[in-house]
Length: 74
Image 1 (spheres, rainbow, N blue to C red):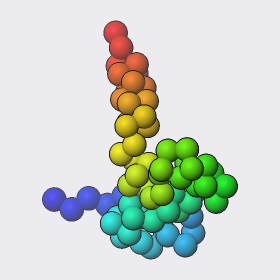
Image 2: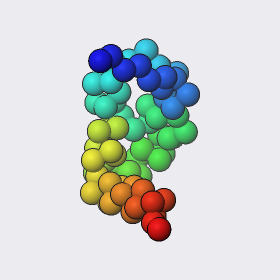
Image 3: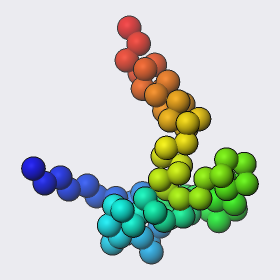
Image 4: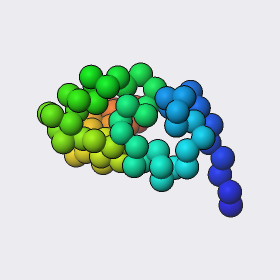
């Protein structure tokens, strides 16, 4: 089953036509709203250089999981 996702609003204009692999391998500044300064801080503080690094960073994954759990808390 093919899946289509509109990512244009979430990406910097230069990455709107990139493949998913290209986006994951791109610098975090490829994400709309992440500045080059933000990217420098992420690299210096957490060794995060790519979108993939950001998405798999243990602290960010844990925080996202906690938010998801809280959203489903009874």
